[in-house]
Image 1: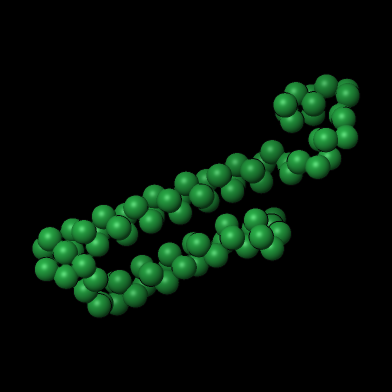
Image 2: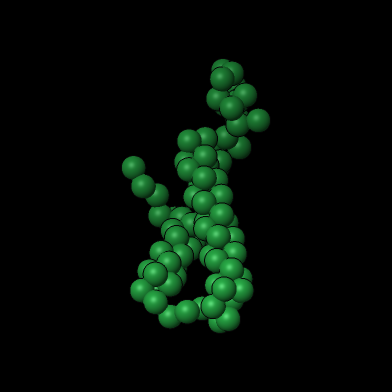
Amino acid sequence: MQEHRLRSKDSGGCIRVLPPCRPKKGVMLLMIGFVLFTLTLMRGSFLSEAIFGQPFKFTHHMVLAVLVWIVYAVLPAGRWCLGWYGQ
């Protein structure tokens, strides 16, 4: 609906409320990446438990992966809750 209104001469009042099309694609890719990364960490945890007998072996790899997951979680939360937008 938003793209149709943008292409036509009539850009009604509701079009101004919606965010631009391009940033929505970036948010969608960010969320897909976050979900895939979360699933990868969970799968790695289960695989680690099967191989080593403990789900989270405390190594620098695990610490870095958890730090990256936290940063990756803060980005979409900051975009939606605090209104952060990049260039």
